[in-house]
Length: 297
Image (tube, rainbow, N blue to C red; front, side, top):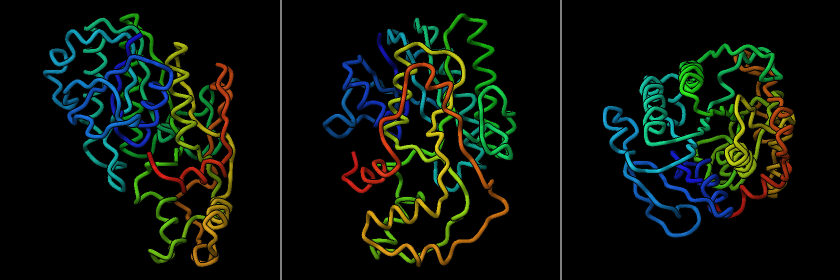
């Protein structure tokens, strides 16, 4: 097995790469940037590939010899990716990548989707029964990529798995995201801000998300899987727990909490289909938060 990995230097991708390397997998990173640091987070072979240069993807991957593809790369600029036209470019790039991967002899692919593909009004989201009705351009782009990839892979006889990823957090997370922002508040480095304290969310330690993806890839699973905790927790409780771990007072944040009618009151994935493949989580929410507080990768 030789694995081609895109997005391997991103937040989730670095944890995926570390776990693949820990298992002794043969991994080649695809991307424009050469890994600059030594160590497990960026270790691995690298091939210079601009995934958005779609006319030249097949030439760029020629001779790669990868049997498996794990595609994580996408446009993820905080606050902009929900509605950016860059999503349209990544639909095309992802489909062209699949074709180039197959042309060089690829056999099985796992692509990262999103919980944003679902109809969030259902709250508890299941692969088999919850409608796929995204409300954002990002969600529509992911959904379109999945539908087209499934149809093409089925016609070509290429194995395909799709991962609906829910709320990963942990070491290496972007500083503008919610939990790192709260850490700065509790450290006295930023002013308090409000959260939707009554909303239930299913947060997942990024190490667990990476572990689930690696498991799906290495065991050759096909179809759609929720990569999620399945544990609904009020965001107010998350604020309190994080403040406790920081030895800080959560009240300045909780006093600013407001309900947000434009956000779903419950947004949690059902992980039972994932668990049926033999993968089970090993970290609690508190353990994940403790690792967030530790040194990043």
